[in-house]
Image 1: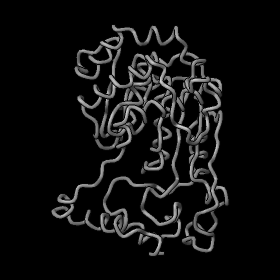
Image 2 (image 1 turned 120 degrees about the vertical axis):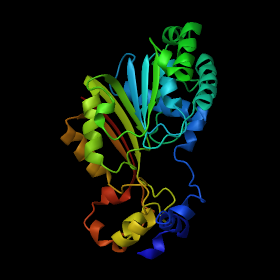
Image 3 (image 1 turned 60 degrees about the vertical axis):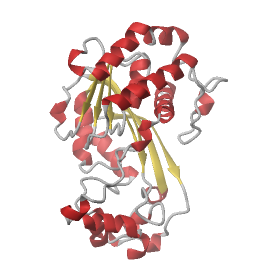
Image 4 (image 1 turned 120 degrees about the horizontal axis):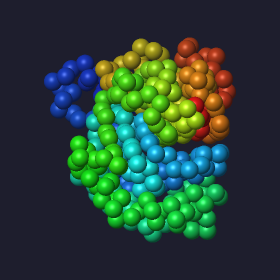
Length: 316
């Protein structure tokens, strides 16, 4: 169905077949929201609070993030909360040192002030916060007093500015990552991602890599966004597109959205060996109707058709 696709993304996809022209029309970088310390702070507080609500305790020593985007802000939140090691894994390198140092300084102020969380979005976790909209039951004064000491923050700054000199605290950024051996097996305590897994090309291999990286007893927390990311008129209109039209819209871009529904993510997670601890879906009824579906999606379940978001917690 051609009518659901927006002209801009189709044109952008077609341009990728003509490199000389394509290079003159730079595409908006993915992950731009992570240049905002406020955004990264809200994302981290959400994942940390939800993890605590479902049984995660303590401070993870090593955190990995899939798809950090334009800054390591979410990982820096983890370091400011007491973690010692962070690795960000991306397909294309977006981040830079100056931006990360700026975001670090802004985040340090937020944690020192116990700045109220302003993110009221889904999954709804604000009822788990204290009267100041802060997870004081997780990030206690004792924990933050230790993690925000001048010496630790100086070590985090060094880890960003001079990674080769970092010792006790490290902050790594690896792009592109395609080989799971880029992270040593059984070394990560916590893996997080925010609106990333819908872009992954090889989902089975990715879930297997996540399982390989986690220590036994490790946790992961992911939010997956099934909306169209501006490609179609309806939020789930990509399921009305024929395979030929979808291929034209994507062009030669290595990632956009993989269109895999939540049931596939949950199945692959279990097949990789994870134990599912908690999941919730955001369902809506304002998308395309079943009669508009392309043949490959004709048998999709109602939940998969109407799910615009999945939040999942799992352990190894």
